[in-house]
Length: 65
Image (cartoon, rainbow, N blue to C red):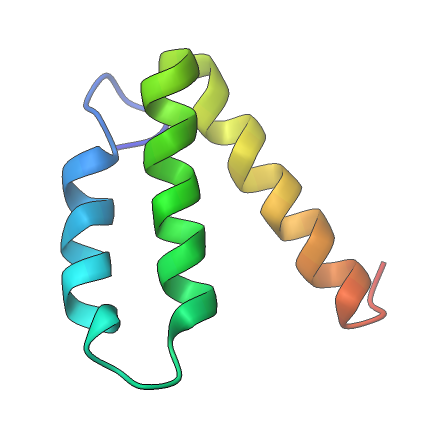
């Protein structure tokens, strides 16, 4: 869990495994890999920061922010 005490790395790896087999899922895989990288680089505080940055970028790209 990102906001709990558990690492989000294993669920993210499972997401990469699941969605990585899809031909058009490169963006999803990149987000999951980024979450793993953020967790491994900065631990629990870095994971929600990364997710917020992804949310903000998505909203901006969709012109919703």
